[in-house]
Length: 98
Image (cartoon, rainbow, N blue to C red; front, side, top):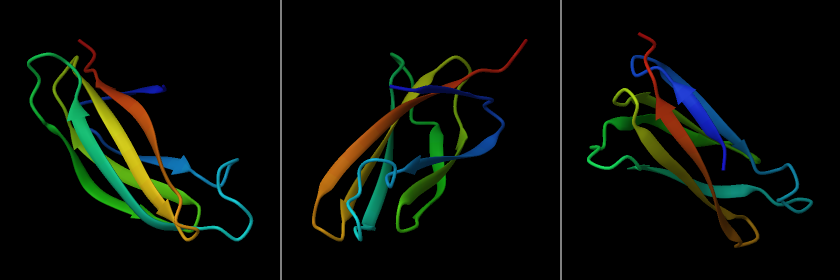
């Protein structure tokens, strides 16, 4: 699982390319939903979605916030035009240099 470092004050977009080895010929993303859950013990849900979108092959989420030195699990669930479902995950760690 990939981990990305993000400044708590930054607003950043993350994309997942489902067309790279997953979607069949002619298949497209029909729906895409991102969820964010805190991983760090005692953390609260402060990394938040600003907006989420998708094209025929790529899902994108824009996130902001987060508490310094906390980690958040970002999950993307999709359904395709061929009625297949799948999910991908990544970690966002918020870090503010001293």
